[in-house]
Image 1 (cartoon, protein in one colour):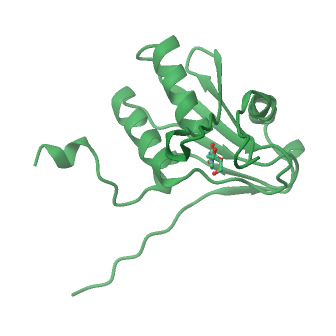
Image 2: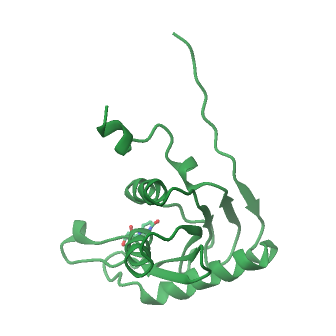
Length: 158
Ligand code: THU
């Protein structure tokens, strides 16, 4: 038996104003996308925005349902929009935030799995910006870091 150790590298910015300009702009797009959220049950309005490899910006927001499990998160909404409007294109950076939340918000487990599959299918990792309406911002150079020891399509082939 031996012990293994996992760690996640990420950058912490005290405020969005300290981000590189392109990242600050993308986080503002994500914040604007919170207006597209339909969240009458949780009142937690999440917005996501991605800068595609071409420079195009894609947005997504959470869409809830009276049958609660039917609801979909902002990140997976965005990934479906990206795959549909920009087939085959890679994502450069994805930003996620929420209205009236003043700390970084963190993608749920399902979204981590979806982000991983998006990276695998397009063949390129993307950066992840996690923010709030104000407050500190986390930046990961590779969103895969959020889901170590993940189950992937490679496992299905074994
Ligand atoms: N939600 C997201 O859209 N993204 C996240 O990263 C966290 C959670 C949504 C799901 C649900 O509509 C609401 O936030 C409360 O969980």
